[in-house]
Length: 206
Image 1 (spheres, rainbow, N blue to C red):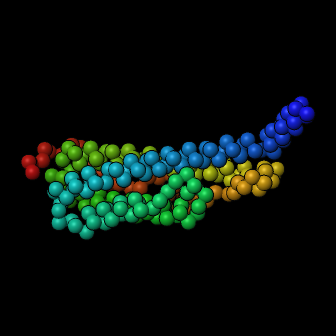
Image 2 (spheres, rainbow, N blue to C red):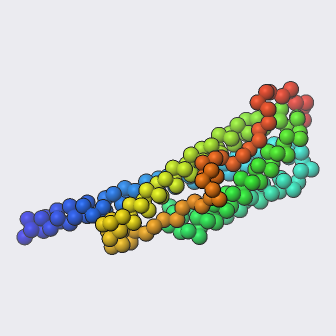
């Protein structure tokens, strides 16, 4: 009886492999891994915001509206609950994307404001935070692009015959993806104007 049971199990395993089950599993895990990297990079940016706001406030405290916008946008990002399951929830993914987009816009306005304050631009801490923000925006773009590609690969796989039959049996569904106004938006980091690359004169003590 045991040899028969082993043979049946072997046939099942071979059948699953032949109908794309293993490939679907592999692509599903790839999507989850890329999603984790997206979250890591967005969190990296969120962690920069408090120090950035406090530094700007030290030189431009009366720019209250812009500072408040950044603070509120950062807080909103924190209220959007995300997890590995978010990749399967179109509504939550859209909420996450909207919140991150609002933070991107608010940070861009904050950087524009900083151009009016030479002492702020010359501050070493602010320059360091600018560089970290620029690098993080680039990492976000790379992580998003890789996630988009992983989702596309997964969706194409489970829509293809006979994988679509296997996906249906095991409950694998098409995953939502980041939406953008145009293709360029997905491959270009949000514009952040860091001003001249030439070091500014030393700022006076504050």
